[in-house]
Length: 371
Ligand SMILES: Nc1ncnc2c1ncn2[C@@H]1O[C@H](COP(=O)(O)OP(=O)(O)OP(=O)(O)O)[C@@H](O)[C@H]1O
Image (cartoon, rainbow, N blue to C red; front, side, top):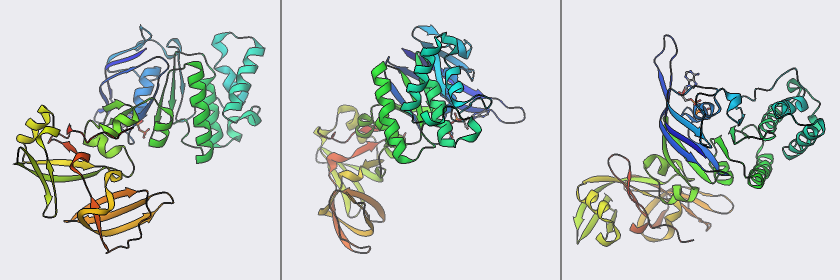
């Protein structure tokens, strides 16, 4: 449905060095799919949306929507609806007129425009301010007007830039559910930008993780957690982040011994590794291993840690412990009573390790969680 091929964006401003905001981006989005663009500030998310919508030119590459090449078309000809991060409402028009304006090109009857505007206003909870002007409503309300103005249109693709960033958490959760329902009911294809992993997981079928203008991985949340492509995705996705540790690699008994410190080492049996991972390990002397905090058992096992902090969050404990000068974070559903300075056993199993090569790419994934 949407195909982005080898798209680059370089901003050239007079007197300043060029900024390479998006690099060789390849992405395909299916009809009816909801995609989140996730990444830290400045990684190129907004530039990507604006190039698809036509508010920014592509420096090179192609964008196709439903078999139409759109990257050279003016925005109005692309059949793409966008809700902007900065809202971009028309100040002299009321909220109702702002939303209805988006329907002008569709030449609908007055009754149909009224019906659609009121339905979308109800959905995003702005029905009571339809006759207000943008300057007299809050930032959160303006954001919802901008969202309504995009969603009210008939378009082939909906682009939503931080659509709920200004809303308080409760309203955000309610709207998230309603918007997901609307998109699914109408089979709408959408890409939204977010900083928020919870929002990305709750709304999106697939998540595109970007860093420094480069798409790092494009997959479901489960896949990103179980099979991170590289160190960046491994450390970016998941809360708290994956524990990452430097190890020394040695061959041992038909497998490998990964030593982190005098008291922390793992034996990996050769048959648990595929051929490529076995070759990569045989050629390595050092590599990075990762283990999710949820995979470290607390209160059993033979790794002794000195507790650094222990917090009960109401439904889980986050325990940070130090072993051989390394900090390990464990998350467990049990309430742990240990205090800083106490010695506590942690259990870490070799089957839960992800292994990363010198280039940062994952060479072996931990055993996936059973459904
Ligand atoms: N018009 C512009 N001129 C020059 N540089 C720009 C322009 N717009 C964006 N950039 C730069 O391009 C890079 C990517 O910006 P972009 O806004 O796409 O990132 P982002 O991931 O959406 O960030 P944020 O989450 O903060 O909105 C940044 O380094 C930014 O400073």
